View 1 (cartoon, rainbow, N blue to C red):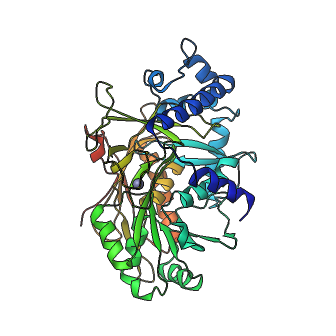
View 2: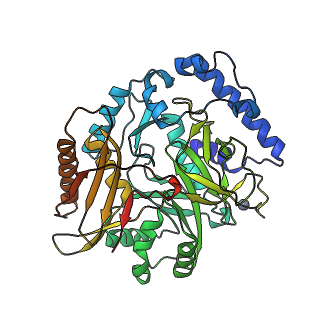
Length: 443
Ligand SMILES: [Zn+2]
């Protein structure tokens, strides 16, 4: 293994906390480091903590939260590396249009775009050094027992990111493929590379299901991420592929949770501080109890410090896990339950197009959208409702046309010709936002 990999494994695999107290001490040490650096390098945080500098988890819980809107509005002052929003946005959009997902901005950071659950665009910076370690977080925290070495992994990603080069070492072979790769090609890769570990979003595993007899390799593990994996579906995959199914919960804001060897999701308490509270701000600590707010503090990303950042997802805590880890478990995640759209290609194939991909097209078509919702009532059909930001001067109809052209153009690349209806509309978020679905397929 390369030394970078050994480091990463050491960092993410072997760290053990025996007590809750040890976790708290570690988090507070990392938190102080993060806050000191943020106060040195970010005028946003310098101002924010001018009257009181939180040094403990207790003190952190009194810090007023930020969210995507606040983060974006203060982008230039919040990041610690002197990057300007205008510049990185232009960089990211240009990369998106060029379908070029490799490369660091100024050779320092990966620029990620996210629509999140609240519609408008978020721009996230991940330092080069951290990015290189992320595949190993996925690996080491993927609940894959070391007895399954050597790993021959196929890692299916929506988009390729920097640091995601195929890795070949005696013990780990890591291959990447885009989730939009045709099924036949994915099956070819699985068979020819003798893949024994598949890492893919549940929607892709679902697509492989009817073809399972053509897959000649036996998976030792399937690792799912990027979407909610329903319990019934997990059982179905498990039966169909006769293997273990584990999950990773990753967001633009951080690597929130990964599964252990028992298949339970544990919060990565050494990478993020996750606070759950009720309406009054009281801590939610009991399994099964529904929180109203979820705040994340990312302990490892120093380029764009997120300190008490409110997420739109919510998690429900689970029971203590028999694996012995003291990291809290997550019973389930609310809020990311989008449907997949299906289209018919010019050569008459029925193919899926993933919500994340469509989201990226929409948010890179214009800066002016506050919220959107995509509906499909039959294969090939598509209607997008958009609500523009309040201070936009452009005619919503023109914005709608931009979105329409962009989606149709992108679909054409997959040999799909369809007329997309884009309609300006009011899209209030429902009271219970965990119920909000941005992609709705109703056949
Ligand atoms: Zn566990």
